[in-house]
Image 1 (cartoon, rainbow, N blue to C red):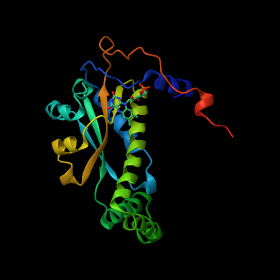
Image 2: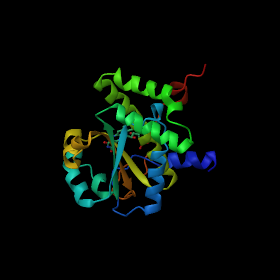
Image 3: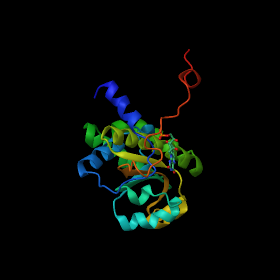
Image 4: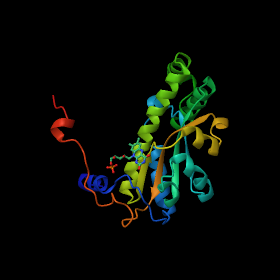
Length: 212
Ligand SMILES: Cc1cc2nc3c(=O)[nH]c(=O)nc-3n(C[C@H](O)[C@H](O)[C@H](O)COP(=O)(O)O)c2cc1C
């Protein structure tokens, strides 16, 4: 994709308020999920899980916990970005085994790196680990938003929800997870959405960028 078409896709996208209920083709959804998977994370540790909710009944249950924002049910999927709430050395060992298998190296050769990652999780408070995990989640959200735009799929990044309610509906606590942000995916309803033709509002280049 050329730079210009990339930027056109980013101009085209907007945080869609009303969607028309049309379904996203499976391959487009898969591309968006693949982009989310390809997001970088600190140490590559990926301390989060991604729930993909296509089931309408489940999205109906989420609706009251999302301040009844219609995109939750008018879209065709809601992606829930959930941070880990538990950290342990077993997760690091699993990660090292994955690297060793993918890159054809021994786990022993990764011992220095393993110590770094274990040091990070052993020497940080759970509060700080959660903040750290949440930061990684937002990068993945950004990749999902961008991929959706490139695929011509509308989306809404969402923080307007009650995490405890969403966690309860999805049983996240039992899974060692907590919801951080959502991405509703679908197609805009141009008639109903007052923002569908609104120009973008961004701070001027000279205010936003500091060139040194
Ligand atoms: C982390 C985050 C949370 C947001 N939460 C909501 C939300 O709950 N509902 C909503 O309609 N828009 C939400 N937005 C959309 C922003 O209001 C929107 O991105 C911003 O006004 C810029 O407009 P644009 O994305 O249409 O260009 C959120 C955006 C971000 C990045």
